[in-house]
Length: 101
Image (cartoon, rainbow, N blue to C red; front, side, top):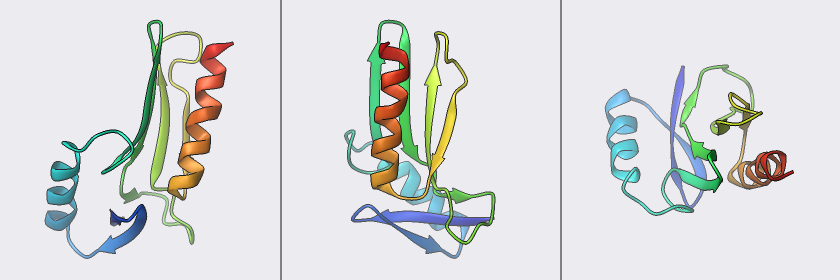
């Protein structure tokens, strides 16, 4: 498992869990669109959340470090992973369109 932080929305691999955990804790306090929170949208009782996880559990050449999830409604449990901040933003829009129709 590899761990990453973000600098200017670009993933940077870190060598130890402590560095990753400290960065993650610090970034949880940042506003949406900065830090590790890419986007959050609520439509009625359904929420779409897209965040930078910073954990490469799949050990792919291009790590999937961002995750979009839907909580509630018909698409509850929907999960998509993304490699870049830009892909995560687009993935968030796709998920929001699912719950908006």
